[in-house]
Length: 189
Image (cartoon, rainbow, N blue to C red; front, side, top):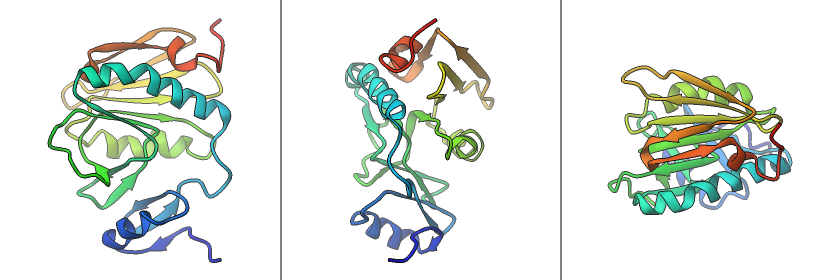
């Protein structure tokens, strides 16, 4: 079997082949990259994503939004780039494509050793260019630390939370605590 990394293809070919791919792949600038060429995510990563989904689910439904965890693609840069965010909330009723979304109000990435620089730098620039996005959260899995970027006009000021605290999520009209995110993963101090 050939190495699937760095395979060039058109957007159309990517979307067609992604439906039948045995593993998730991201698409950037005409190239396809396997999302997890190595073994699956760590237990902490999976538990944090599950905690986030559980904490957001009821508020998302009340707000008429849709909540996705890691299996829904996000189309960026005029549908020439596709990522799989760890957690995504879409409240735009016109964002109806069933294969990918284009108008999230909240994106969350849980850091892992292999994605840390990409999530903090590469994805940050692309995500914050989305007009619909109100908040981007970057969540550490090895310590209780969250980097919360919230839209303020054309700026994205950072609020860093460590140990404990709450983050207001404007599109869901709720707050999310670090205790909820890290329940059963990392104890509070």
